[in-house]
Image 1 (tube, rainbow, N blue to C red):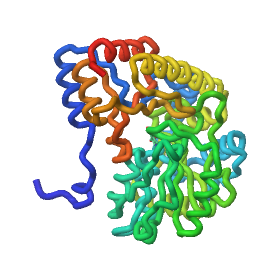
Image 2 (cartoon, helix red, strand yellow; image 1 turned 180 degrees about the vertical axis):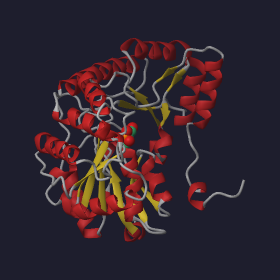
Image 3 (cartoon, protein in one colour; image 1 turned 45 degrees about the vertical axis):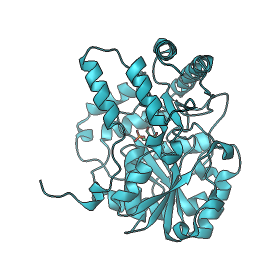
Length: 388
Ligand SMILES: Cc1ncc(COP(=O)(O)O)c(C=O)c1O
């Protein structure tokens, strides 16, 4: 085969490849593996959303190419949700574009903002596409370490001047995957001021907007005065409505950036299946009790898992958001060695922190997307079979 593009060759190695190989071998040997590695909700999409899809799919008008911008009713549903949920007013014509999940938006926005050798400042640890997206746009990511001492917020003052000069954009996201951190201070206001000073576009990833605990309500970045001047927010239906397989979300905010995104996207794909757009509108406009039930479910699992992990000596603490626990590994381990050991000895999968960037070293991520009994069983196996 001929050589592939530098762009593709430059993508970081897939860090789960080795884990997947071991898992496949164990499963082939009939071993029962408990996977707390992936953040994919285990409960179904609420029935009224599925019914809306089924109904929409019967209408032949949904079978043709959809609008790339998203249908007007879909964009109005997003605007209505932002108004009710965040008190943020969005113009459905200029400030909203449908996306095929947050991931699509995160990857493609880099192509709108970066030229060769440009820099994207990216939270570290962070969602892996914050690094891969810039590479695919022939730029590169400069990582912003998130450390517990600063509440897993980047230290904006510590960014190297040379990187800042070349930086065109920054990726942040709260509630934060993988650390579970949330914003409870003026970080977004400081970020807006910083972005204005350095002429940066902010991309705020709000994929976990509604998955929060202990009464904490997560803000939109766009609530911050001046935010629309400097950036956009990526919003997803995946986690709030258990719709990861549906590929539905929106990019919202700065009108010029949304227009550039739309221009790019019209050359990349042909938009979101109209029936999925109608069902998404039903999700956003309809009853929100499913989201509340999901918060209660994950909060219960969070408390169960934190308690069980602490009881076996791991320093787990309860996050206020996301579907993950970010847990320091025992002394003497790296994130990869601890992950490998518990897979080997306990048949339990967690994600090694280093897979989310160098600042993730020293941690593993446990996902809350399994029933109570499987969570208990996972910890029981670690306790019984692994020497911590
Ligand atoms: C931080 C973060 N952003 C974006 C995504 C992608 O979400 P979507 O399913 O909307 O593409 C995920 C998925 O896990 C995520 O954790």
